[in-house]
Each structure stands twice: as C-alpha cells, then as structure tokens.
Amino acid sequence: MTEYPRVVVDLDKIRKNVKVLTKKCRESQIDVVGITKVFSGNIEVAKILVEGGVKYLGDSRVENLKKYESLDVPKVMIRLPMSSQIKEVVKHVDISLNSEISTIALLNEEAGKQYRVHRIILMLELGDLREGILPEDVESYMDQISSMQNIKLEGIGVNLTCYGGIIPSFDNLEQLEKIANLIEKKYDLKLNIISGGNSSSLDLLWKKKMPPKINNLRLGEALIFGRGTAYGKNLEGCFYDSVKLEVEIIELKEKESYPVGEIGLNAFGKKPVFIDRGKRKRAILAIGKQDVDQSNLEAMDEKLIILGASSDHLVLDVTDSKREYKVGDIVEFKLDYGSLLQLTTSPYVKKVFN
Ligand SMILES: *Cc1c(COP(=O)(O)O)cnc(C)c1O
Image 1 (cartoon, protein in one colour):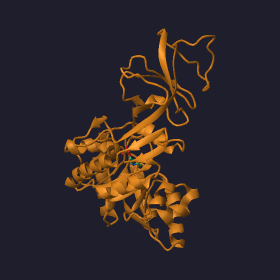
Image 2 (cartoon, protein in one colour):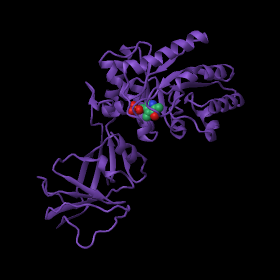
Image 3 (cartoon, protein in one colour):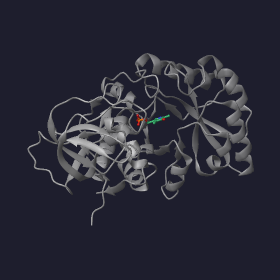
Image 4 (cartoon, helix red, strand yellow):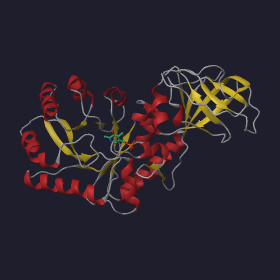
C-alpha cells in the first residue's frame, strides 16, 4: 500500500538538469559544487549529481556530508563551521567555507591532531550581508592563514542573493576576481577555486557577463528546479517539475466558508480572516504546518484554492474543480525551494525516488 503524504522525485529529470547545467558551466571553465541541502543529505540525489557531472558535493551540514563517504568527490561544507563541531568537520569534510580567523585557527589545530591538511575557501562580503570578511581585511586574514601549517587556502568565494537579495553582476564578481589577483600576487600562490556564488549567478553565463577568472559555482536550486534564481527565470533545456507532493483527502464536505461564532485567535496566535463565499465544497488533507508552510504550495489542479492550514490539516476549497473529489483521493502539488526544504526535513513525509 502506498503511504502518504509523499514527495515524489524524478531522478532522471534531475540528472538531465545536472548534465545541461554542468555542460553550460564547463563551456566557461567553471566547475560545479552540487549542493544537496534541500534533500537533507540524500545519497540517491547526491549520486545523481555526481553522475551528472558535478566535481564536488556540498552541503551546509556535516551530518549530511558524512553520508557521502562512498562517493569519490571532494565534500564541501558550505555553512561556516561551528567551533563545537571542528572535529567532525576536519574528519568528514575536505573543504570548508570560512570567514572567522578563530574558527580557522581551530581547524588548523584539529587538522594537526588528525594528521590532515584541511582546505578552506575564504568567503568575502560583497554586499549581500550574510557571511564573508570585508575586502579591507583580506591582507590581515591572509597574513595569519599563511602561517598555519595544516590549512591550505584552496580559494576564495562569495555568496549573494540568499540573504540580502543582491543580484550577482559583472561588477560585484569582478571585485572577487581583483581580490583573487591581489592574493595570488602578494602571497605568491595559485588559488584553485574562485567561487562566484550559487544558482543566482547562472544568468550571467547566458548573458556572457561572467568575469573570466570565476571558475566555480555552488548550485543547488537550479539543478533541482531548472531555474536561475536571480530573476526566477526557467533555464533552457531543463526540467522544472522534477519534484511533486502527493497528499490524501481525509474529509470532504459542503460547509459554510465563514466560521460560525465569535472569531478569536487560531492555533498559531493569529486572528484569521475569512471571505464569505457561501456554502462551498471543502477538503481536508492529511498534512500540516508541522510538515510545510502552505503558502509555498500550489495545487496542480488550478481550480483548487488553498484556504489555510493548522498543525496537521490542510484545508482546500474544491468547489470549482472539474474533478469529483472523494475521501481517499490524492491531491498533487507543485513545490518550490522553501516547501521542498521543509518537506524533506519532515519525518512524517515519505520520499520516493523514481
Ligand atoms: C545554499 C547555498 C548555496 C546553493 O544555493 P542555491 O540557490 O540552492 O543554488 C551555495 N552556497 C551557499 C553558501 C549556500 O548556503
């Protein structure tokens, strides 16, 4: 018996997206770090990314990267390491993104204890205001890193769009290029990785506006959803529907659309607002806020209206649909990055790979 709710993943579509995008990147001498965080470290997906042509696997959590030990590509930790997790990071991660000298010093010390060299990418703050050192601090960081025997500076990088919504441009990535040139010249070394951001940097490739020294991108969302995330534009030759959600109807009744009685606070401390459409056919589905924020869902049947959700119930208005829904029927939803991230994290949601 099939179990619901479930996220259904079409691995062939993801493999195709990975092939298209790694090829596009390769034409500009760019290697891809395949980012798996949206699947909570699923090895099936990680394998597909490697088969499709990514050169590295990246994730924000060491717990996820640990699961990829059998896959023969370098593992990149894309969230800054926690001081409390240094041992694990040195043991399971080949390259970590860093922006704090105290953390890098701990990595150096621990790498010495484990007889390893730990590779780092130094992150730069170029406007998005999430992680990264300020450009004026590069030399003081470099002076200190240069003296650490068990740390190898693999490269430098930037992250844009995720927090501040700043769009990658020739100008802000050229700044990264200039910093790379400065480091290579002053410290007489070669940086292997100049990492120019995430899926939001892809549009620059199509526009042919990527500064030439950028040789690495960290791609998650684009590989799964076939989307360049700076403008939410669909990317040529990719699939946009590699994942979907299936949920079961547990109640279906005609009811008033306006609640009866005095309206107070709902389960989440908010006063709900309702539109009175008279009597409507309503379905309750067995999924809730514990699994996903319903505002990130979109029913494939365009006539369905998502009315709201509580912890474990999703309420839909199905009156306008051509389909005659009944209890036990399955309703399908399109997903976006936010809903997929939440759903794959919920232990109550089954994950099926086709
Ligand atoms: C999440 C993340 C990425 C991947 O972003 P996508 O938009 O999914 O491509 C890359 N780098 C860092 C540092 C991230 O946190």
